[in-house]
Amino acid sequence: MLNIFVHLGHGQGLTNHQERFSHGQVPDPVPYDFHLAEQMGCILTYSVDHPENSATRFARRAIRKILGFDIVHALRNLPAISHNDVVWTMEERQSLAVTFAIRMFCRSAKRPKLIGQSIWLLDEWDHFSRARKSLYAWLLSRVDLLTVHSNDCLLKLRSILPNSSSQVLRFGISSRSFPHSQPRGTLALPIRILAVGRDRSRDWPTVLSAFGNHVEFDVVIITPNVRKKEVEPYRNVRVIRDATMDVLRSHYCWADYVVIAMKRNLYSGITVALQSVRMGVPVVSSRTGGVPTYFNDDQVLYVPFNDPEAMRRAVLDCGPELKLKRASEVQARFERDDYSSHGMVRRYIDLSKDLLKSRSNVPLY
Image (cartoon, rainbow, N blue to C red; front, side, top):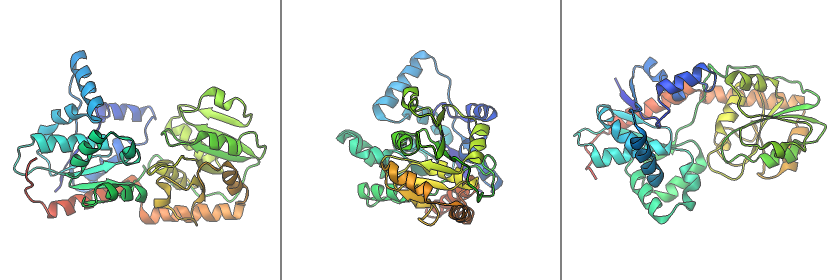
């Protein structure tokens, strides 16, 4: 039986997350549906936010800002971490913090194995200072298994740490919050375009230029990152800044196409693409980020990044029959490769078992 410690960021613990879930702000009752591992025979322990006063909170945040990860939060949880077989993380902030804590302070003869996940760090690597690169490379080289969500991230990681143990661990979304919906073979007039996203890679000017004030389209953008004055010139564009899961699902049901316009990056777009596909909506995506790792050219309409004309033409040239064909094929790919959170958790468990098969005492650094 696997004993797993899930290290979450400070403020992202179970109580806060479950409250957000009850208000429809997040898609899963436990972050990333990791609780599904309990149904697969694992025992899970989660990181805990320890009480703080104003002074200790200030100190923790100051150290986090200097290092780029929350070592204080990791050290507070180190006693619980050290009593488990494997530690799961989902972001590099947690991966780096746990690695530092284990390597520097864990005196257990049988230290836990760590699956360290990276999402955005590799995309920003070239902009880090030499000192920060050295620290992060030292820590990452000591992670038992480094995982990423996209092929481009993996190439970047292996160029930085060619001897690391690393691989793609494909992401998954909640099947409960995004139920399987049959693709539609019809098109509304005007064509309904939905664009969703909140990370810094999104290219909202390209979406506005491609579809704004074109009578063929009705556009909804769901993001907190578009300013009112940016949208005012476009009569056919509406912006929703803070959508609940109910609102998000209703707009996936409404849309003819979901558009994922991105600046050049290594990691982005995966979550929205998977949600769209699960709910039967064909995807138009910039050929960058993480989406090409999950779906091929027969399944997603790819266009060059920063090319609004190509994005608009891709939608106009895709008639109802081709739209239905692509949506059906991409949805079949989702099911075949199991891009649900259940599938992702199973992949975590399989990797954890492989790590424990090769368990050995590793010198402390």
